[in-house]
Image (cartoon, rainbow, N blue to C red; front, side, top):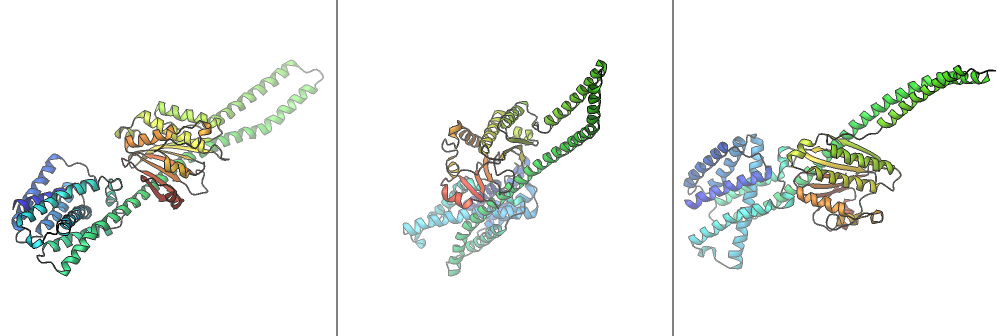
Length: 488
């Protein structure tokens, strides 16, 4: 009785733990959490009393209890509660099956124990060990970098349901296996399938994470392009207004300048030019010169400027980079959206933001320094409420050797111009500090910008390279922390 009760409570706890890891919901209020725990305890006691008559009851009750917990305690729909509970409990049962298979293999395969000769007490001890082993399996599974982000895609509905069906099939197989008392060929076949299903779920999980990240990157690109398009439309309207103003000046000059030339010629051709007339002509010429100088100065000043971030120090960094780009004959633009709330919520230091931004912009200007067309764009904003710093440039593609060593060794491709590689080491140190993701993206040919570097403060601590040269990069680069995605 005590073992059955402990088993049910542990399975329910493991299922709840797995759900929190794969979905990462908001914490429950204390009263609601106490109510959920109380209901789970009552269900566990009732199930433990009835399980001797129907052994699969514990698995069924824990599964249904998880669905109800997610549905009512976390206020989710039944469809989502079913998908989340099925995947969470499927992961728990997968850990249980693999732990049981491993321990059975050691006891009966390596130590050559006879199943019929094992006492009830020894069998109880082995079952208890299997139940205890589930937690380290789950703990280390969610420590794996690839699976640390959970199954956030379950909220979107844009995912393959094959893994959910596999988890549901594993739950049904476990219910059926636990109801069998004799070993038969059907039992062995069901057990074999149940052992394979956890691996299929992991493969499905990994593919959906990859699919979700590609979708996030695509949305990030769309957001950045949308911001850039809005800014360019505003600049285009400003240029149109300036063009209209200049056109009006030119239209007027087409009439005034010939008239003024005629007046000057008449004055010079006069037998005795009058000083008063000369001074009047000079005064009118000075007024015309001053007016046109003011118009042209306003045109030159307004045609290209830095978008304000709302932070004086950060604006100073952008202004400094703007002046440096102007000296290098590089077109430098900015695209700024609201980011202060995300920066504050994620507790990101102003000094670190300025360091990242300055390093990325400087590297971008160096990259496009030898190109005929030199363009750099700095985007500061958010993606899914996470702060994002992204810098585009029109330079050459990423060097493969640099990709293989960047962040792990002090490496630079411009040592001849004073580069030391400290900037990239600092960038990766800040990546570790904030568990941010660095995304290097090579754009398809034909656009203004050929590549970009993003720092996304998403707490995933990933290093991603997205390129049409994915196969070449995978072949050359041997580092284990790089995720290489193919650019469509």
